[in-house]
Image 1 (tube, rainbow, N blue to C red):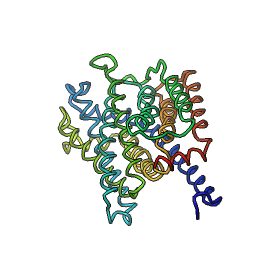
Image 2 (spheres, rainbow, N blue to C red):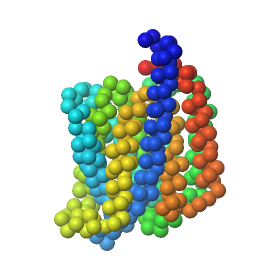
Image 3 (cartoon, rainbow, N blue to C red):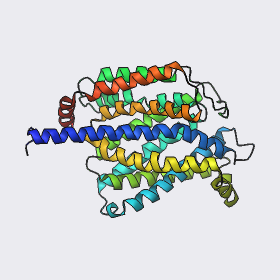
Image 4 (cartoon, helix red, strand yellow):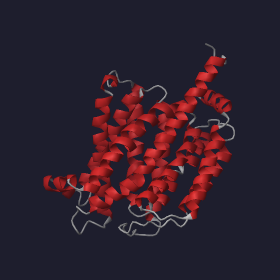
Length: 341
């Protein structure tokens, strides 16, 4: 069947629509993780020694422990459910899993530390700066052409996310004071740079890699990095002692937040991402990831880690308009994707 055959064109369009819906679902699951992770970290911090509870070292140990446990559980569950695919690893599987895992570990760690000092709505906005960072990297670093009409969508998405985070004071009173102004925001922006690297690595290796094998390696790399940082940070040892682990396992807040992010925000979300993002141009995927702060804000309102404000609804509407702008010209986006390889 030739590339221009009507049936092939319709099949490509259907795959593209499926990929778009899959990435929207990813953003839904990740949006949930923002307030859930903040609540989980607050609960975990209560199990640290008093001297470490509100310190930067304590924040490092809590973030590392949560990342390590979350992705160790995700790696085990995911590998069991995809056992028949966990054989015959290729270079693309290994390089893709390791590169995306390293970038994601760095990004998530910086995001979680920043989340201890910033409200979820602001964190969600700064994390979603990948909307602009991905196409900039594609255009000026990788020298790749971009899909037509992508810049108006990027402008709308950035405007919407800025409105979302305007005057974003968190209702959660247990956030710790930053050691200097904009400390949490700076860490979160650096994390968004790492997430940009993750998206570009997935765009590079994901087309040749098997999504199940790439995902399992990514989960393993992330779990190892988190556990090492959590155990070696000041105060982290208390979280890994048998008595401390028993208390943490009995903590109801840790239980429901941990299970929800492991199943939905980790295993399911990243399987969808690693399977469907390679079927779209990375710049288009970057704009779709602009939905993450919209869902993060909605869930933050439901869990009362953010207060309702008119700007939340205006910002969310602008982001949805951006998604409509960049997803409507399907044939031209497909042609651009094919030409940029």
